[in-house]
Image (cartoon, rainbow, N blue to C red):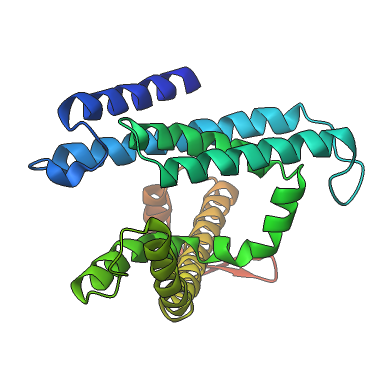
Length: 249
């Protein structure tokens, strides 16, 4: 149930707050066994709950009357989207004690707000669908890009967070595009072809088994062992030709 997922996420966040004091679990010894797993797991259940809430809201939502947002509902949705962006920007630029613990909850609300695409801001962001396409590569690459920029001293030598963020994205997006087209997309095609190949083999095996069962039934035999005994006594080959069973002596 969703309430149990929410409770699990809250317990994970509270455990990190009491143990680490932040979501920076790298400061915790043996962090991967405890801190990282709890952090990722609690964020995961928040995402699952957001998806369930979105599905419930979508089922009870009337279809939109046009190709884009319009009317008072669009104004309200646009205001909510703008407010969400302003809050996210504020939290990125101004730190406070429980800054990182607020982020998973805030991002859950942001996803729910923008997923319906009822406002002009979310409609405009639909033109950036390609960023969603490469999002998995971006997720896998971001930490390596951060370490590379720090190691080679490529980040701006200032305290400006926005300047560092701009350099980070300027490096991450091209690299993620490269890994998507060179690694991720070919790997997906290979995996799908392997799945299709083995699925066809399993389907052929199922067809063969179904034919055997039909053969046993038409011969009045209850099992392969009974068929083997009958073949040993009377038949040499059991074949199917043109939809008919042919028993060759």
